Length: 261
Image 1: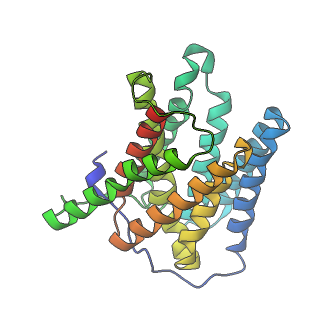
Image 2 (image 1 turned 180 degrees about the vertical axis):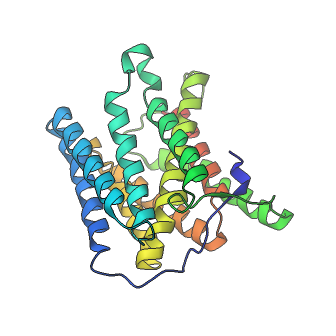
Image 3 (image 1 turned 45 degrees about the vertical axis):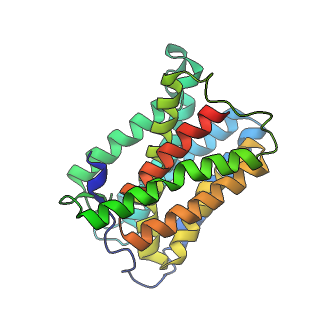
């Protein structure tokens, strides 16, 4: 996938919110609820995600081929796939440090496949190479990743000391892959669909869902970081109508965060 070619389409074009689109909000709230349930039981959280994935895919299947809900439902299904995959993929075959990489690779494979067979469901496309000003803007956006990672690491109350020396290269790569995948799923797939349904407030809805998935971590600071980065990168993706910069930013953010912790 040519990251520099990823483009957001028709970001602020779409019908006014309808009664049917309220189902999308309900699913998003339920996904956050499933994340919260992991504190009480991992099995319960997995069951919630699995049921939600089934319901969302069923809704997607029974909605009309031209339904305005289909891209949003596909994006929500990708979120559920990421969470289910984190529980059920064969984790015993790899080190715990690389567990996040497995569902990320699965989600990326699904995104690539869907963009080839049903491009209307996954609004990512391969565009012509960006002109120099556009490429420069995306690189500048990418630079926000390291800056935010260092800033939040400094203010993180759980950080006793910062180091760049003790994290294996493979772990850093897995972290970067996780950040890249999350950005493609949330800003590249889900945000554009929610904006088409709800207008610019879809940016905030996407950020809230992304941050809400950290509820199960038990860390208020993780929620704050998720919400802040989601709003910043969501706004930048919307402003530039491209996702390549925020994909780079999140990948670098996750890499440096792993290195500093």
